Image (tube, rainbow, N blue to C red; front, side):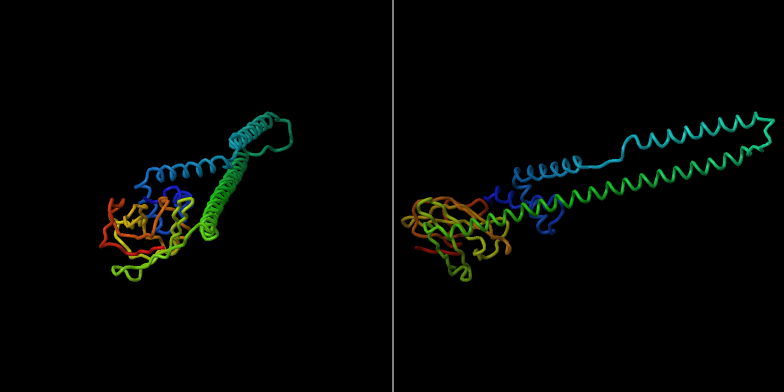
Length: 275
């Protein structure tokens, strides 16, 4: 089975949620999510985290803004009506009163102007809010990139650690008559019993979705199951840890049905190597 924990920590799920992956990678993520419930659950958790982050840092217009503007307009209109009534009763005043029609038109235009300014202000606030949302999305993308780079560095460090540790024996597996061009490199530590496959070194024939490659340890002439793996992508880096074993005289790889077999299919052997 695939190393689900390693796949989750690779950063590909965060990029999937943000839509920053190719169509091929998207299809792969969806296939993995359908196959492994823990990956599907991780995707849901990432989506919730991003939504929570956006809501937590959202900037919305003040709820009192609309009420304040409308109340101000109503107060002004009320004061104007009082002023007109007072002027009507001043018969002995030599100052000519403005006609009600002209005053009404003036305040109608004033109200329209205020309403226009209000709409412009709301538009500005909405635009600012959108820009803040965009900034939050970019920040999330940067954080995702940071996680992805950190995972890649960690994988590189694990790979280098294998070659630094003198307890590891490096073995080159060569192609068989079935696959002469096939090859891969693994390292085995007889003390810690760890078996690590150098992912970048795996050069095996492509297979269909119903099959996987299975690693076997050769122990006193008998094959011992070391786990299954798939042909890695060209840009995959790092090492893949297989099952542990204390003693082995060599290793081989065969093509088996998904999930592996109890016994190896000898006619499907693609690489083999001995110490």
